[in-house]
Length: 270
Image (tube, rainbow, N blue to C red; front, side, top):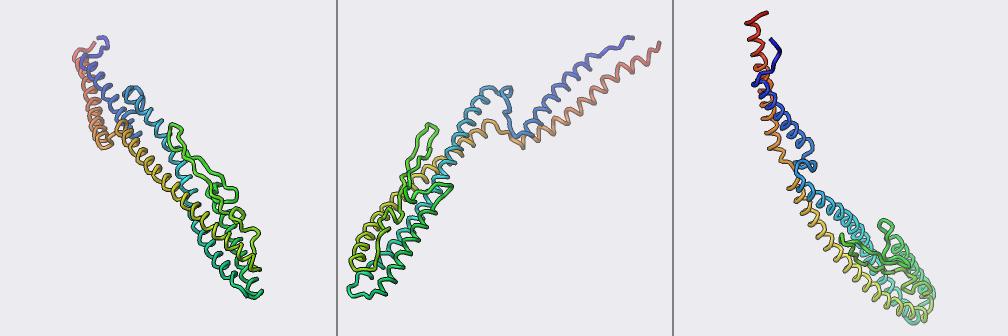
């Protein structure tokens, strides 16, 4: 008798192939964590997911830009507040030096402290950098911050708080006339520094608000993308276990089906 494959075996082979395909798909979703891995899974959802992924990449770049700007401005604000405190101390020394009849030794001592504070202000403003961005140093320039995927930018103006810009370079308290000039200059500097700190604080607030919005947008996009393509691992794990059982049963059924014709052949030898 010729070797043939029974109809029941053919049916079992077809069923087994389908189960193996289902098992492979389930295992693939478990290993990647994704329900939609490629266009074959769902072409329309895959296309939308790709667009959302592109938007997420843009939002990530904006977040990085805003984080850098926020740190730079916060550094400048802190430096501005410290500069304001220093200038107020310098005013105190200038007021003391404006006393008529002050002896030369006292004037020299006051002037030395005044100059040390000016040097400290110079060190403070020149070192107030974050990742090479300094908004309060001598000659400080503004920076532009990317805030949207449309290319919209926010301008942050530099606030030069250096002693040179505030007019402290040639001041001296060693004479009454010099002390009077220093007091006038320091009073003007207090107004300048206060205005600069207020402007930096306003910039910091705007950046913080934009950063919060961008973070919220990032979370929404990630959640939406996850809803579209993420696999339910609990469901997929249960399906995987069930598919394994079905596959094992299919293999046993195929073995039984194949054994049937062989048993019949043994009844009719020759």
